[in-house]
Length: 589
Image 1 (cartoon, rainbow, N blue to C red):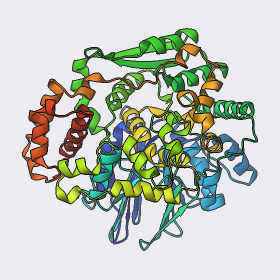
Image 2 (image 1 turned 180 degrees about the vertical axis):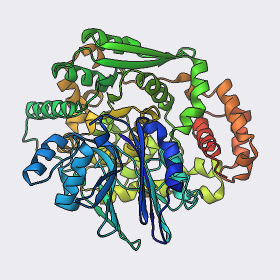
Image 3 (image 1 turned 90 degrees about the vertical axis):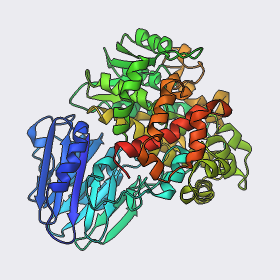
Image 4 (image 1 turned 60 degrees about the vertical axis):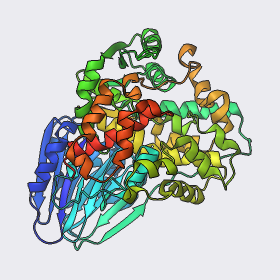
């Protein structure tokens, strides 16, 4: 787990100048070491977090002179030991005990077909000396990020967008498509980013860059929604298959040469992880919970639930209480850690939690993905009686932050693309191989919305402190199994029915049947008092007035007369404020 960056020049020799600048931004992702290697027109850089093979032999960029291959890699291959054994049987010799070298040898043996053999989370680049070509790949569910920009002079890539922007070649002109998605989805999904000409490598895809700058892209994995609606398998059969897959996933993610902890919110998902790890023999497990100050009648923590699990399994439990002034003081550094603006109120919770956790462990398991994969959100039940003709609109009505009429009020005309985000949903549903609208919605959330909201949030906030987060609910074999299950086994009894049934065999019922919770951050959700004042300060800056991104008359009314607005006003004000803050903090004009 680390940060990677690089430059591939098509117009001459590569230098370390831009790569060094990118690595400065990525330093927190890999505080245990830095490596830069330049040869000819290629320069790779790496910030290392030591998790597997803690010796110098595991350092990157890693070069194999015999194979003529050089790699930079971010992530973890959980089945690397089995793959290593297979590759040794095929005649490969290893100089390290790292999963990085396994990727290198696997690519030499099977080329892009090696990707189908990996179980893990990854983004990597491999340069081939003899052909002077570079191969990029990203894991199936987009757990690890990879940003890039390509023009006639070269290609530049990095683990984060702010890092990539350190290259003068990379444009910083706002992308109206990305802005529209941000305002609608609260995230920028797919290949687009906040800036025109800057892209993300899609999950489950690879990219080849030839010596002359030609690009070839391919897809090595897709999530097929081949739901078994015939009900030929019994509920008990599904439950046992799910239980087996869950334990296999949790066990895989214990692979490390350092201790592994758990982010314990007290909800079903993280509690189930603790229970499974306990049954797998993990004792004195480090668990971590965070809570905030109450605001009026709204409680700011869920310690009563996390305490149940911590006590039941005798974990080494750490409770972090983030006071109001702590939250406010850390908002700006939290925003600095964001690859792109992240609206969810709990992002500051993950940031502060990761800061505390990093003092104890280097690796944690986290419960992200269970709500999307096993249908835990409120917008899934309304999709069960949707039709093909109204499915996209029904999803949008439940999910979007702003509808098109509201966007036309708050956005400047150049960024008010009519129904762009709704059309994205319609096109996605039309191309999805799921038959039912509810399965299409689950598919969209798992392969797109999850990637660029919860997963990006967890990656960015944990890596801000050199902490590796693993997500067992997104093991690709587990996800494939879940998408064979009929949706009633997910939606029943308020959602995640089958997951709850498995949990009843493992963890206390008190955390299974509780109301669904989130990281409660009431002060940020309300946007009152000091938070409203912060928004006023942000929009008082000359650059905010000159940007011509928002309709400033509408913004001024929001700030001056908040009592006139209803319907998640605080969340909407935070969304526009966050975007402007992010742009200002990254010096975007």
